[in-house]
Image (cartoon, rainbow over all chains, first blue to last red; front, side, top):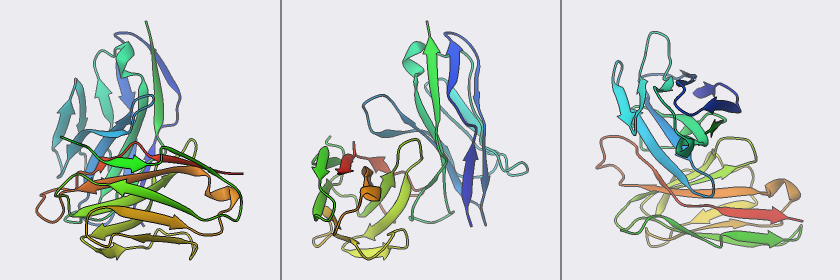
Length: 113
Length: 116
């Protein structure tokens, strides 16, 4: 069945460091891919998305590219800030489906000043 | 505009009791989802409504769990004979539904259920 695997945390970085959080997926067909973020005390928010191969999603300085050949959707940011401290979830939805999202376990990021 | 709201924000109950969790989706969203998130895990799908009907309830763990959406808006997740293992954060999400080109779901803040 469909699944998402993301790197385990926690990840601790200094401010302005480069961030990569790895995400790989297993799916039939052509899923849509998402990164959601959960800030402390808040609900899940969509960070970025990509709906087809080679699409790049971007938002708030974060980027992720849909790589069908490696079934990956790694999250990157060139210079993290303290305010980026949160839990990040990679997720997929089957193509053309309005059904459920399948989430990874989440990666907790802490950014120190 | 108003986002997805869930009530209560916290619920503490005793083993064996019945609980109801409520979700108010974004106005006009036809699709509604329930997920359960255990500590240190990602959300796990429970049930999905398109309008008033349950389009997919394959994630409900057993027959103690039931959800309704009688008027195609507010939904209630009902858990009978609660067990300690039901303790988790229950998340609700809504999306525009079939008119949307992709499945962006908007999440509520969750209800933290603790079964003693």
